[in-house]
Image (cartoon, rainbow, N blue to C red):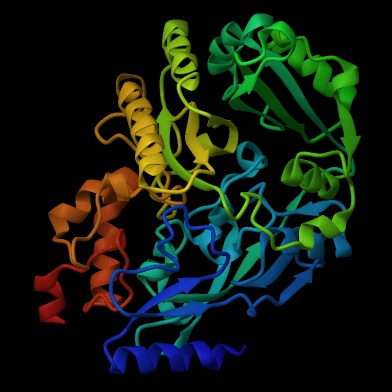
Length: 455
C-alpha cells in the first residue's frame, strides 16, 4: 500500500459522496473505525506499517498501521535505553492510539503519547499530504488528542523517544478482599498519584471464583500492577516510605529491560520472547463481546463506596475495573497544550469493562444494563461539570450524531466530556479544514454551519 492510494481513496469517495471509515488497528471500542449505518468505504491502513528509528536524534517515524508492539520492537533493535510512552496492548495500531492521546505505564514520567509527537503526515479533505508546517499549528494541535479521524487520514507520526534505564523493576501483586484488599485500594487512592514519578502503580479489579468448599462463590481480586524505572532495592525503599500497607517484598519483584517489561505487561506473563510484540492478535478473544466506559476521579472515594462496587461485581460473570494513577508529569502539562485536556486535578482514571461470550440480544442487554447501572452508581464520586471521559475509550452512551449529523450543542454534550474547554477550538479547526464534514463519524467533531458557509 502506498500513500498515494490513500489520497486517491479520499478524492474518489468525496467525488461520489461516500463516507470513509479509517482503521489502523481495529481497536475502536465502539467499532466506529469499521462500521457505519450508511454506505461507506473502509480504508484499512494495516499495510502502512514502516518504522524508521533514529537513535542519534532520539526520534522515530512510524506509519499509522504499525502496532505499538512493532514500534517497541523496532526501538529495542536499536537501543535498550530508549522507549516510547504508549499503551500496554501490543496489537493496538499507532494511528488511532496516538491521535486519541495514548497512555501507558510511562505516563507519570513522560505524559501521554501525543505529548511526544513532533511531526505528522496527514491526507486532508482535498487529498493533499500535509506535514506539521503545511497543516499549520492549529490542525497539528487538534490531531494530538482530538481524534485524527475528524480531520483527515493520519499517514505517519514522527515521535520523540524518551530515555529509560537499562534495568526496570516490575511486579504484579494480587490481594483478595479476605486479605484486606478493600482497605488497600482505599489507601492507594491517597498515594497513587503522589508516588515518585518513576513509579507507576495501577490496579486491576476482577471477580474470581473461589475454590474448594467455596466453589460456586466469588471473591474480588485486586492486582497491583507496578513498574519502576530503576532497581528493586530502590523501589522497595520508596514503597516502604509511601505505601507500607501493601507489603511489597523482594520476591514480588522482577528486574528486566524496559522492552521485556513491554512484553510482560502486554501479555501478562513472564514470557520474554520479544517476538510476541509482533503478533497483531487482539487480546480479547474474537468470539467475546464487551462494553466499556471511563471516568476520572478527583477526590478519594469512601471505603463503603468501594464495597458497593464489589457487591455489583457479584452480579455479573466477567467484570473488570482498571485504575490508572495520574500525578507526576501529567500535573505539569497545561490542559490546552494539545487537544487532550485531562491533566492536573485528576488523581486517577477508571476504565470499566464487562465481557461476555453468549450470543443474542438478551445477553447484550443484560451486560449493558449492568455496566450502565455501575456507571450511574459512580456519578457522585467522579469528575463533574463535565463528567469527563477518555476519547480512546469511546462510549456511544455519551451521545452521538443522529442520522450522521449533530448540531454544535448536541455534539458539545459528548465533546465537553472528552475535550473539556478544548472542544470549541477543535470545532473551529474542523470548520476551517473540513467544513462539509466529509471526515465524519458518530462522535466526530462537527463543523459550525454558519462559519462553513462563510468559508
